[in-house]
Length: 258
Image (cartoon, helix red, strand yellow):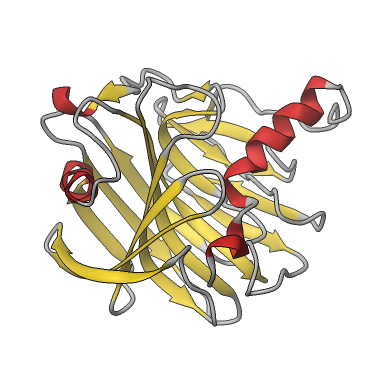
């Protein structure tokens, strides 16, 4: 996919913030508190928290069609994912769970943003359930910026594609390969019009992964796309669906920064 194909992606929440500012998204609610019993979210930018430390977000930004997620005590499942978008363009959404700050919504008790030079390790893990009747990627989304930003678009985005189905590709083009976090990856680099993107694409589907985020950050620094003086602002895991998506699930997620 060419760099312009997903140019709208990093600005989705910025656009939402603009609409909120003028008061025309009054119907979009945010569920507060920690989810114990299952919580259903259908609002485009609706969120809740789980385990008292992570935010789960519906994050439907690329379509006006309905999307709903069922949030459990350990993750979430997409229960409705209507409509589709062109596979040569941006995905419909990024339903996900995260540690850190995303457009001023910070997860409870997070120590992010954190300067990269002050991070010893940043272990994370995820477990996925996939479906066969959707076009999607299952990916981490990790954000870096020269400033400890809690709002707005960060300068560099790291994506780790653990699986993808259908004719979809990361931003930019493949510029190399790397062995990081105990796995071999195709490395794609590009810019979507709002930020640099470095994507690591698995050679075969992975339904779970445990790794140190810091290892990927080091590799991105070696590519000249970040510096030790920059900040890690969030660690997110979820799905980017283009077509369908009901049944996709994050079964479990963990993230900490030491």
